[in-house]
Image (cartoon, rainbow, N blue to C red; front, top):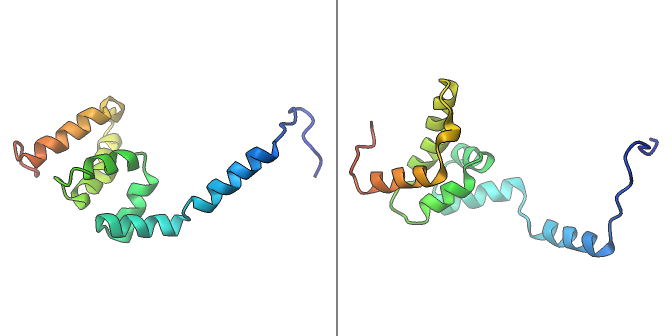
Length: 116
């Protein structure tokens, strides 16, 4: 293949290569990451994959760290219920992380029934 002539070359230093290699050595593979999530949160393989592959992984971990809500319940809401709202045409971008966290905190306090 010929080098791209319309795009300028980007130099990479040996230090940048070393940093990338170090990160690659410590970054778990997809399968290892899924297995770790399954064990840590007691999720089945499908739930672990869905939450890991979603935009909500950080939020999931933050909600689950207080141990007030079941990780299965949290994963289900984040991966299924919010996705269903999007499919129905609702703008889920209006759901800010702090609102989602507060909703789970209220559910943990049983101020609202989980089935509504």
